[in-house]
Image (cartoon, rainbow, N blue to C red; front, side, top):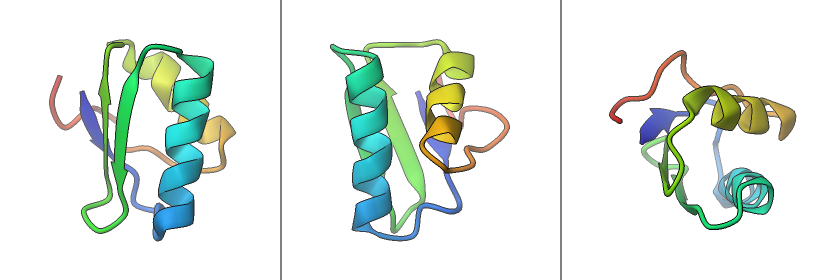
Length: 68
């Protein structure tokens, strides 16, 4: 699944989001691209859980996945 995180503005932001998701959900593959503002998560499909993790890391994910 992919979703936007508009307040992900740099590589540090992307790394923080990636680490938060991968640490909380072992076995996921995360790509966070600050240029496109897209986060892609493979290996886990519960957007509500991922959204909660991203919020806990200090960022604001979009209301719904761009694709599932």
